[in-house]
Length: 69
Image 1 (tube, rainbow, N blue to C red):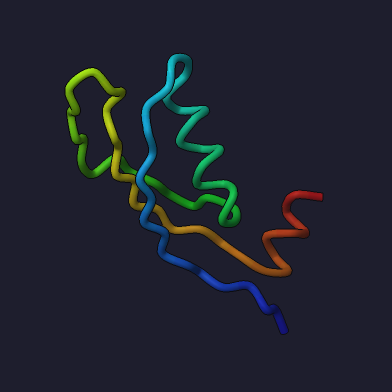
Image 2 (cartoon, rainbow, N blue to C red):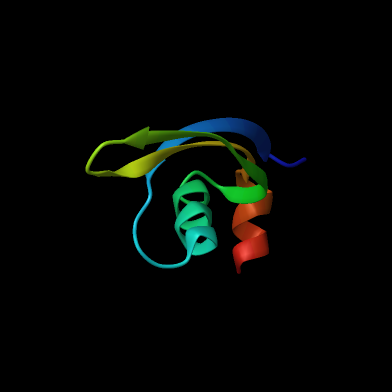
């Protein structure tokens, strides 16, 4: 029997120079194996990088660890 769980994740990410996809996947990947993610909001701030809202579903647990091996 597997101990893997599907977990919803809601993140806020400050946009940095470089690949947006790599930034989002790294932030989401810190919570488990990403199954899907979407940018659901962008907050534009004066003289600061935009703040992105990311909604994701990750797989967390034994199956996720086996997939990474």
